[in-house]
Every structure is written in structure tokens, then in C-alpha cells.
Image (cartoon, rainbow, N blue to C red; front, side, top):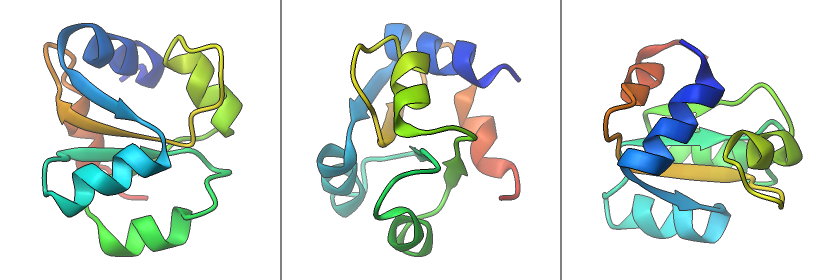
Length: 95
């Protein structure tokens, strides 16, 4: 699966929250179906221990922001609704 394409489709057709603060809020409310974490996220270990399923993005926050089509760094994203992307299959992969 092309992760960048899947992220963009999820953003366009589903519901996604960007950033660590928004991700933690959705995790606490049990709304997130998948959390994608950049390799440079400061709370990476804590998030990975507190929530499943997670997908560790192979790139920095700048790379994840670029994959999301954003002009800023994105340390994490929470997928609330995958839309037509099929991105939830990433949560089944082993980290």
C-alpha cells in the first residue's frame, strides 16, 4: 500500500485530525481508529504504549506533513473515518 496516497485519500474522503494535541483528544475519547506517528514525534513511545492500532510513519514530522499535503510539520494524525482509502489495514501491520 502506498502510505502517502492512502493518507491523502483518507483526508479527502474520510475524517482525520492533525497534530499531537488533536490526536490525544481523539484517543482519550476513543474516536481514533488508527494513529499514524512520525519518527520524530516527542510522545512517540507514550502513544505507542497507550494506544493500538498505531502505524509508525517512516519519516519526520516534515515528511508526514508533506504526505498530508500540508505546508507545516505534522507529528501525528488520527484517522477517525478512513473514507475510501483502506488505510485501516496499516494498523494490522507489525511495527
